[in-house]
Image 1 (cartoon, protein in one colour):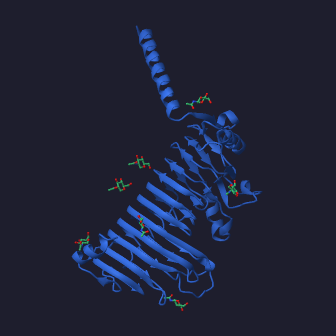
Image 2 (cartoon, rainbow, N blue to C red; image 1 turned 90 degrees about the horizontal axis):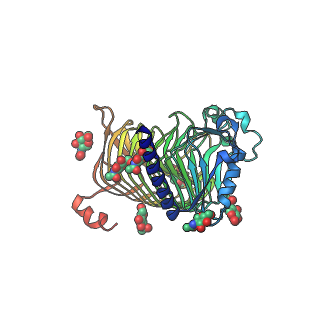
Image 3 (tube, helix red, strand yellow; image 1 turned 45 degrees about the horizontal axis):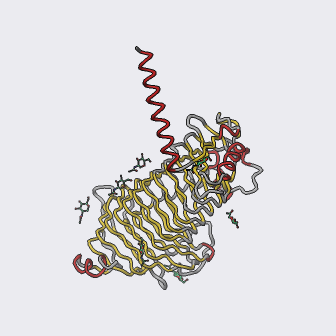
Length: 417
Ligand SMILES: *[C@@H]1O[C@H](CO)[C@@H](O)[C@H](O)[C@H]1NC(C)=O
Ligand SMILES: *[C@@H]1O[C@H](CO)[C@@H](O)[C@H](O)[C@H]1NC(C)=O
Ligand SMILES: *[C@@H]1O[C@H](CO)[C@@H](O)[C@H](O)[C@H]1NC(C)=O
Ligand SMILES: *[C@@H]1O[C@H](CO)[C@@H](O)[C@H](O)[C@H]1NC(C)=O
Ligand SMILES: *[C@@H]1O[C@H](CO)[C@@H](O)[C@H](O)[C@H]1NC(C)=O
Ligand SMILES: *[C@@H]1O[C@H](CO)[C@@H](O)[C@H](O)[C@H]1NC(C)=O
Ligand SMILES: *[C@@H]1O[C@H](CO)[C@@H](O)[C@H](O)[C@H]1NC(C)=O
């Protein structure tokens, strides 16, 4: 009797399985390249870089089908710095990360790499889909103290360069030596459901940095690190950031832009439904005095602050202590809208808009902003210099902005925008 039940079970399982397999084939005919078949060990100690590269070359090299590089669950793979290169034969390639990837555990293991700035690099791959629920551990703690002295030798954990139509989701990414994810020269990027975590005091461990890229959606990510949750740097446009939980960290930044007189532009940015927990900034715009270029059409909407130090901040003439003072007016900042923002500030200056006397920041719009102090008995204020624009229903009041009654604003601006 028991045997019969098992047989029936096996038969129904088999038919379910084959039916499912047929279904999968019809939708996307993928060929699996499991790293174990290419000699990976997965014990967390053996260097599995060559096995990963062989599996990648196979997956990237097949035509007709979609190649899937598979990193199996329940194993940990040690990778030295390496680069997964395209172009691939097929218009889609999958990187299924179900297991764990770890970086070398000592700094010596990194020596001998000519390009000492990146750990896992993906270059020139169109249509990469990376997901699987696995984990990437940059083991950054060995670098975080060194970082303070030789900052530029530290590794970015995962970099994408020249990767159009990238989909990145369901990965747990921890403890990068420097930034966790960097994206450059890419179009059509969809990032969602990532968890990025490093200690709040780990230096330069940005969550996601984007430069020279266009058409980007980032949604439903939790980012808790020691630096910016998301930074949009030069050459970025058409970015939609939605449903991000940020903190600890330095907040969501446009910039910094224009160091050493660089020409930099950022435009058409929409940051929506984000929360900031204990961050040193909330939503920030930061440009260097010697910068050229512009920031235009940036909107922050539906933002919540929980004990953030500088919830809303613009610094058009950013200077740091290590750099010699350079003269300049900063780049053009035109059209920044803040709507539906609330929460608490750890600093007494909750809104701080610092713009240059000759260039200024123009068309700065605030509507329905209410930030109070974290300490119930303290009051918060707003500071601004050389800012032009208007406010409606904003607390604390921003002295530079013209006050508009809600009805006037709805007629003239919000509906027309
Ligand atoms: C799926 O891949 C197999 C093996 O490469 C091939 O024979 C078959 O024609 C492909 N089917 C489709 C629908 O592309
Ligand atoms: C991408 O490929 C093109 C041509 O195939 C090449 O010129 C370019 O240098 C590559 N970019 C990267 C980042 O490898
Ligand atoms: C958001 O991402 C988390 C993983 O970080 C996932 O568990 C959850 O299902 C996602 N939510 C939605 C609505 O996609
Ligand atoms: C806002 O983002 C959070 C976190 O991703 C999500 O759970 C929630 O559904 C979003 N709310 C709206 C209105 O989109
Ligand atoms: C401003 O940016 C938004 C995205 O946030 C975009 O939809 C809109 O078209 C842009 N407006 C202009 C005038 O480019
Ligand atoms: C604005 O630019 C001028 C000219 O370079 C500079 O002298 C001034 O310090 C800047 N203003 C601010 C507020 O940084
Ligand atoms: C601003 O928020 C505080 C704290 O939540 C609340 O007590 C106050 O009524 C709000 N003010 C306005 C104008 O909404």
